[in-house]
Length: 226
Image 1 (tube, one colour):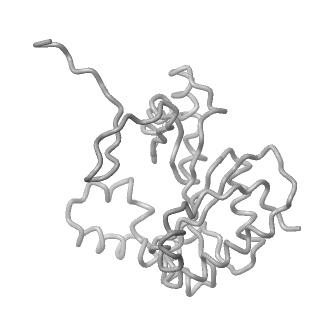
Image 2 (cartoon, helix red, strand yellow; image 1 turned 120 degrees about the horizontal axis):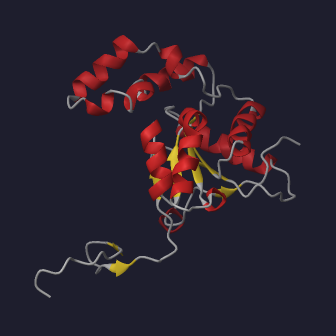
């Protein structure tokens, strides 16, 4: 009909060679938020939340208020927390932090800087390295990493993405693979998930067939040492 408003259609582009297909109605849309206003909007419009530990701690009431305004039940909304870790010592932490030095101010001011050179130079002058990794679990002791993840789950996270900026990504993958084996066999009410979301391509360690399968979101139960 001429002049009629277009009707919204949920579609996904599968590939360049495939036609558009309707998305499943139950597919959740997790909304990322890193501030007070965006947390409220994420609760109001998203099916779940993606954020960092500090933002979750500071503005959790805003997210819950937004969900309540939309008539949503937060118990049904997944919460994905991004957690950086260092499997090593302070030297490893400093090298990794140098690559991610912009993060503490990424969503406060740097997001509005169009010049990539300035984004690289300003953190060097404004952010000491020790501030970048001050709150990260840093050690090769499994107990420290397990405690850090469990704290997030106990605080309401249902998914934790574990990031590492270390050069030796195989070390991190193997370390967290061993952590999976340390979890208790008995299930609990904590239906959380955890995964090592490694920055480099995991396909180097996998065959083409296995690379097609998801490598993250492994069921965790409670991550406690035996």
